[in-house]
Length: 365
Image 1 (spheres, rainbow, N blue to C red):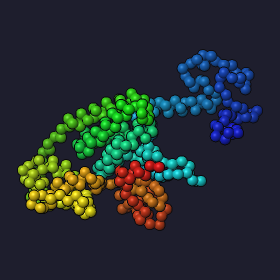
Image 2: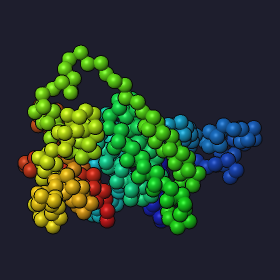
Image 3: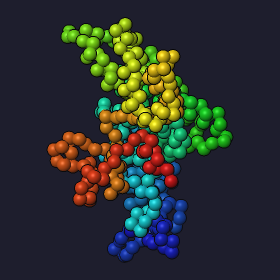
Image 4: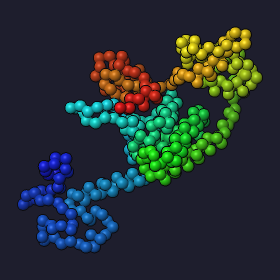
């Protein structure tokens, strides 16, 4: 039972109940309450740290050693699988403190999210934005968890060959940030030893080499191949792509796709998808025949304005409960479960999808 002294925040002494009343549990080296007991010097000098304590303190020592052993033998100190967290930006009478970006990174279940193809691009983009500007603002545990999840992202790309270009850009931005942190170590805040950061930089370099050497095997298709599809079907597939790099790369496959990828209608749809009419008027690009060069227009607008982001699934924020959560579509359809304990009358009206940039802005105070 702890004793609360004048300073109520102090843990106080440890006590145990005996037949003669309450007695304080103290360490060896001080005068013991029970004079009949003698100190065992061999036990005191033993490597077994449990013998240093008496009574219930022995259990605390054992628990602490098991925890330290677990932390040293695992890659992450914190193993959370929370589907939602409460985003708190200030102290109230009911709640004290606030939620940080590192805490959200630790608690939300990003490890399972990267296994879902609809969430993989979202998590990768979020980690890319963190690598650009927020990496050194994370706590030591959050940084450790960040690199553990990043390793799983790289492994998924190497195993499933899914979107390697996005992960290459992520590693390139992360490598540039770590180079800057390592060079200007005296002028910036680094959490942890510099050697740890240099070791992480070396690991990132190895991941980049593995992705550069990635060879996607040619799959044997018994049915109709892509180039055997009708032209209108190939054109419809190109129109579904929202990334210009994917269109250009696909156009290099065959002469037919090269012709389809240069279509003015295709680039016009791409411009209208990412940018507004006001942005067109300010940066109008005309060809020699006074027609709009939509391909050149797209790359011109991309230099001045952010492009529209599109993801299969994102994190959601409840404006009524101030809760950030992953929404399970299956539970939503079957059980009418919105993904968190919402107290609103109409929970769907309070939900708001969160982009990666908005996710970071939620934790900027």
